[in-house]
Image (cartoon, rainbow over all chains, first blue to last red; front, side, top):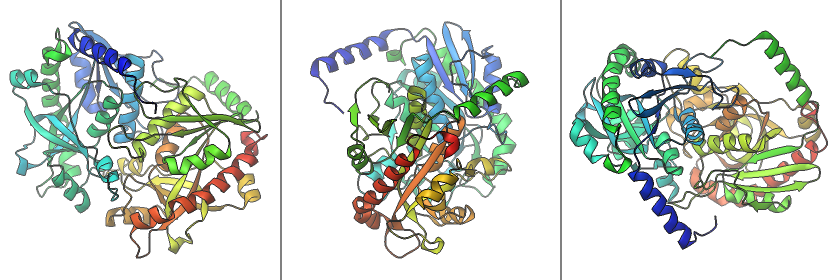
Length: 265
Length: 265
């Protein structure tokens, strides 16, 4: 890792500042489940794209189209080739985020999906939140500094104008690869001060930050984690109905973004 | 996901069979920690490569050189740009495996590193194992079929001749993003019948399988998980010494591979 040359660094900062003043053209929306993705694919009149933007053999699906002045790409990690279920979780989410940024050079990433919510933090079934912070809750590495790396807490890209105009709820998001919540997970989620629990957000944030692409996280609550109902049952019962609320919020966000530049969000 | 055309499928199978009969030329060795990587970098006389095979901004490091008749690339995910610690765990491991396969088109992946071992399954400090199976132990999704997807158990690429000649120990490997082991992790590791516990293997296996590249997993035991000593302390105490054993085993494997084709391993 060579040290930065100051001249190059200043030039890079200028380029970033200029990019933030250009209208947003290309958006990548990362969605983990087909049930969550399809209503938005229909809403934006996107079609499945068979261009080889992804390598041969991967199940990743790109839905693409023009909506208003935006080049919209919904990226779904597809179904596991052996088991036939959606490729949920941090590994496929990080891979498709990386590959989509490399192939499509988006101005903005949106990670949209369902999540568990904590009623103690004010979440109700069907609520849609924008995540102000993301962190992991299942990467415990009890060695100094590695512990912080594991949690990987970070503020998300700031969108004060969008939040004000759309009146979306705001909360912290904690990510892990399990749908259930073990006592160790619960302790970490509490330490992360999270209102929401999902299986992809912090991984998408990690990759977007790595490649310097601003990212927004829109999460709709399918199940209340801190009640007595089993998560899996509640999640499956509410998935379709809550997806409609998610669909509406993502459309509002995309409509708000249309015609704006990054620095106006 | 369009159905396969039978003619294309047969042609693909023929190509794979032919590739397995060509001598192995390019190897990618994925190693999560610098302390594990550097002895091998020196052993194979590799040098840090500043060619832009990876995108700008990522901390990933490629050490490259020719050793015997092999084009060897050690890929280390580098240090976290904010915290300065090695980028361990499944997300960086899956990203560098993906990016390395895309950039370098290797004939073979080797994931080498340290691991925890279970004395109840015959592991001792300093033992080096080849993993015959990999699975995840921290992706609990209690919905039918999704549960299997989370565990993602798979046999690794079979190397009967290598195992016979090098007399390496063989065991099952279970992967998770925590260095410690919660009771939920322990139950899953037991269900996975694992001798070894690491933080990258199953993620590297997932990506290698996705892109149809054979992968070998070589893991050296730095700490005994099922004893009374704290994992982090034991891991740090043994890291350097055990890395020497890992170094020797990887060299033996690479020497064995030299001049052979995939189907001869």
